[in-house]
Length: 235
Image (spheres, rainbow, N blue to C red):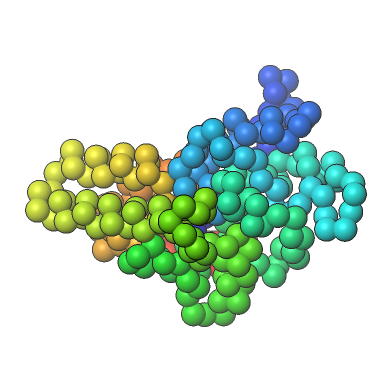
């Protein structure tokens, strides 16, 4: 899962923090910061990408929307319909789960052939498992007609990235590398592309730079962009 930086709340022309009349009004600013990608499954979307609340705006069992959550920039991410609906209004203690805007989630999750996602072994594995379960990241559709196509699309992205890697090995050029990055941007699933090209430091640098809002502090440029602990995060 791509670790992202939302940044400080946008400001108005007077230099004051924007006050959103409705949380949906933050969508444009979030897309400008994070790109048109689901913050959880990394699918590239446009019209159906929604503002998602890390802490639910209406906690379980409550009939009241909490404005301090509903309109708080620091509580916003972007989510696809599937990730948003699976997550629902689960109200977790933030420290019992990993989060893409706080932790190096790419360090905690493993992506593999076939579009599979799993947690990496280590001290934070239980938190990574909880993140996967929170949005159903490892779900597979029951039928070919099922509406949840996250796994199928991730598998297609994996196959596409492998083919691109093969073409690059046969004919390495600046144009080819740029074309691969543009294909990744249009397709989404950043973690898939990062995994397939994990032995190519130049491609890793390009992918980190090409996707808006990717947390560069999660990678050591001096060590071939190996993953590192995110400052202030749990991993």
